[in-house]
Length: 308
Image (cartoon, helix red, strand yellow):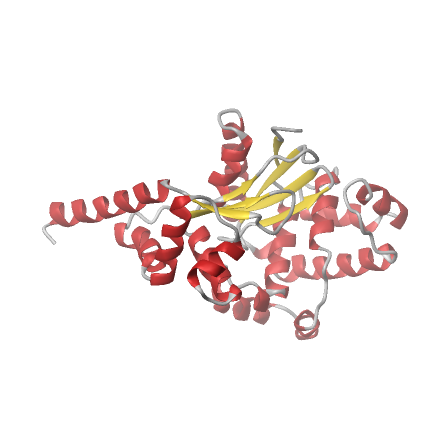
């Protein structure tokens, strides 16, 4: 059995084009983004009315296959290079590029290519190319930083660090995890498993707040719930499955999942993935206690030093 997968770090504006389009199109189904609801309204006003109406009813569900195509594109240094490459890609070649990784491939690849090209080209023209250059620069800097960390940390620990608790367990089939920094879906991570490979579009680190209250507040809010505290206490004994946590706290599975998601995004627990996008089980991340303590210490020290 394989005991270790390798890490590959990639960064391309084409990935961010795809993620930003995905977040806009599926905003109603994506509950956890730092952009908030105001971002969609502001973005909608930038789009041509006819195109915006199309996106309201869009059922474009090829995000994950498109990530695979971007990873293989020789011109992904620019969005325009990727779109030009996609435009000339024959359906047969698309199939050949996907078949090593994907078990189920649609038959209408030519129609999917044309539809994807139209949607992404319009999105690039009216939204993405107007983003500040500093944002893409931050993504590039994050990729450089992560590449350096690959030499210093075990793959499984590095993934957990970058995603605040998503732990991709080694399995026999998994040979490589591709790490791709992204901004628009933060603080969420987009994780997919393919044959022998997983893609992990993880959120870039937020800008330092330099505000002890702002840094501590999300952790305090997450802890201010009796059921979440009981889940933490339950996980302190040993790793547990969702069913075990559900049986322990006595809430609906959807409510338990909401609490678990909140705890994981706060970096308090781990989600363990075993060859599938559904977590197999959960465990406690003991280091969050030190994070909370350090935040409290910074808060108290500032009050003492400023006389507040």
